[in-house]
Image 1 (tube, rainbow, N blue to C red):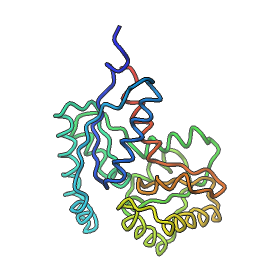
Image 2 (cartoon, rainbow, N blue to C red):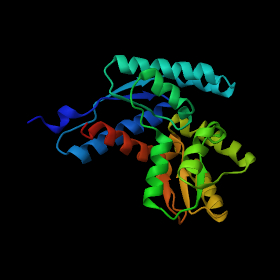
Image 3 (spheres, helix red, strand yellow):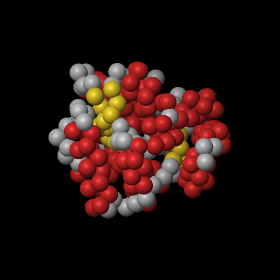
Length: 241
């Protein structure tokens, strides 16, 4: 009889967006694989780690077509390397999820759809969901489509000037892997503000926010999109086909 590890699908991971989140994903994937399969099992994966600087510059300049092509190329390289599924290790990068899946010709484990489904399954009566994410994410249609149209949440977002402050924190200390006390306090204040506006739960919709999740206690549920996505990737890797 074949062991369970012999049926594990190799995950093709598009990382580097930015490197601290890729490091976190690698740890989470291995922890969840070990919890699922037990023993000495670890995650079978290929990581295509991109250089974030040119990608960020192109996104800031509104050159999404160029960014999409870079992500498509990364997905094809993972497929050619033997991946059986693909995942983009970034909330923001999911603006190109459909194109990446088509380029790879492989199943894509979609962060936002999996996150929305997980929160809705755990909290069927929840209506108002606060969202902390980059301006790139909140301005793109994919968050709204999955969280509102598909899962039925009413999204609460920071005001425009506060969103700029949030971006400065994410693309400042957090993107360099520096979870400073000042950054943590600022994110806690964002959470409290959305709670006071009526949010019944809070979604950390940015991988750079995930290391702060355990330090936040706003009095309502806090959902970490990175961990929920990692769990979904592991389910896809280990579910018999």
